[in-house]
Amino acid sequence: RACLHSPVPAARPDPESTGMRAKTVAASLVLLVLLAWALRALGLEVIFPGGGTTVFLSWDSYYHARRALYGLLNFPKVLAFDPYVSHPVGASVPWPPFYDFLLAALAKLAGAGEARFDAVIAWIPPALGAATVPFVYLAARAVCTAPIALGAAAIFAVLPASSLQSSVGVTDHHAAASLFSTALLASGLPALASPPSVRRTALVLTRPAPPR
Image 1 (cartoon, helix red, strand yellow):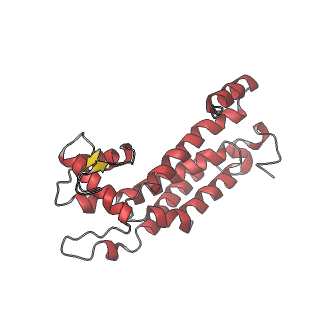
Image 2 (cartoon, rainbow, N blue to C red):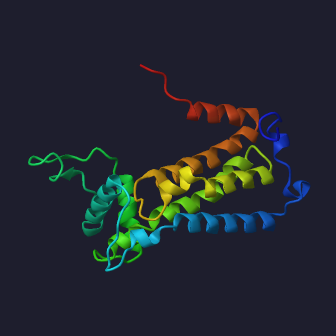
Image 3 (spheres, rainbow, N blue to C red):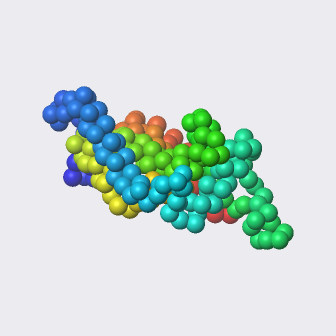
């Protein structure tokens, strides 16, 4: 009821009124981020069996790794045409380029060469998953009280549907999609508590285009 059946402005009391100070909220979020990271690091002995080997957990993860490695070695290019697809003629890669470019860019920032590349990008999904936790809190806090928003962040941190798709070695795009979509919600939901003119503008900007 604190979220769905109360006017939005009334559902955003000052942290003092809910008995939760800003430092308490910040400390709670730090703990949830660490918890999210720890859960997503489970099973690392499978991902790193030894001998410098990195095992990815899905076929899509392997192909993202291949495409990102090409991006690292040919930075800032991204593999757009792959001669190994639809052999022997090759084919255009149907995936958008940004995620694989992001993997390559982060690996480059980490100073990963070709030998360490797989091990570095295997840890990027847990980092993205943990980074999503504060945005879940901010999105929920825009329409709910601080305790409920922290509860939402806690659920996301431990939810198997989230943690399994952003665990170490799962270099598919799901962790990035979750992070960016939640960040978009966190930036847009505060408009619901704004004056009506601002809300109308936000609805116009986010309304889907009519079918042609």
